Amino acid sequence: MQQHSRRTFLRRTLLTPATILCAPALLKAARPTEKLSVGVIGCGIRGRFHAAEFTAHPDCHVSYVADADSARAESVADQVAESQGLRPQVERDLRRILDDTSVDCVSIATCNHWHALASIWALQAGKHVYVEKPLSWCIHEGRRVVQAARRYDRVCQVGTQYRSDPTILHAKRFIDDGGIGQVKVARSITYKSRLPIGPVVEGSPPATCDYHLWAGPAPLSPITRKQFHYDWHWFWETGNGDIGNNDVHYQDLCCWAANRSKLANASISFGGRFGYIDSAETPNTQMAIHDMDGVTLVAEIRGLPSTDFSIRGTAIIYGTNGIIVLGAGSSVLYDMDRRKVREFEGPPEDGSTLSRIHIGSFVDAVKVQDREIHRADVAQGHVSAAMCHLANNSYRLGAKVPAREVLARLQERNVAEDVLDLYQRTVGHLASNGVDVDRQLLTAGPWLDFDPDQEQYISRPDADMLLSRPYRPPFVVPEKESDL
Image (cartoon, rainbow, N blue to C red; front, side, top):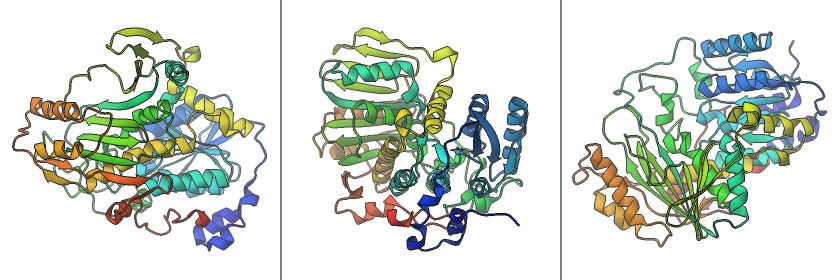
């Protein structure tokens, strides 16, 4: 009969919070002195990267791979076996990995709706966690992961790997030293053309996929898309749109560069899904403005063909004395007239990939049991993901209005961003893609006031409903910190 840890028993039987409080002392493991045993959870695009990077690391051994789709897990297991000479054990249910006390850490590259719960369960089981961005599907989940990481005293790093880019690190130090004066605006740019995903269909998961396990915390809703994998990004029950899929990287850099460790005081978002009709729910064009206690963060996401922003980059930091563009392998300083002043040097050490450097910092932190030395702590990852959720919450509470009404809403608050320019560039972009902006309605969300200390909306119970959601037992993210 298989032996189970006390935490495994608690997780599966869902005992009372009072009983769970007895568990943390049981999870203190000895510091690993040999290779770290790693379990890779989620075997899609990022999971393959994780498996490759952990396999290549001299201090790691990939002992497990898991995916609700067994075909994907078997494929990654073959990849690992070829690289490390020993095939990892394959599981469908990630809990089998967490039951094994010999596993030191896990990497999580599941769908977004699984990130938080998988992380919490792993931390409760005494594992160190490397989890892909975004950390959470909603704001409530991210805060619980932070609390779990602190409660169980484990390293938990988020896969926002641009923080490990040497040129960005040098530019960040320059900003911190006052090189561009006071930061006033930070802009994240995600211009990534996306094709339509096809009409509404009666879809189904692959025969090799356990849909109950795949859905986990999400509802077991009918599948209305042709491509089961990846296109879950464009549905609210499982994904967060491209703002949470890609732009989270650049919002992370914006918050980091502006030294903002709390969420915004107020946020607004507008946009829509334009240029084609398909089964997806999330916008392919989305703008958001966040008022962050003296700094304005602006997110711009475009899924239709677009020209570059006026200064090419992915995260642009505007100070009172200069502008810095942060980009992987190329970060640049401009003066206030947008003339290039200097480039920040720092190619990846020894030709390593950026992901390898980032994962290496996680491994180093695990080996010495010190979360201070890795580069993307869970608390920072929570803020970056939650900024995307703030934008999406405004958008989801929005209404379809004529374009001119969008500008009126943007002008309701006094922020550092030139909202007229943002509006005109957005409608110009849509017009260049054949969208009749004089007749096409845009979705415009409201300005939502937010308490960043309590992480709740102010006088908006409808928005508070979007901070969390109902869960399917036993796939339940704890409602309160005391339930962890």
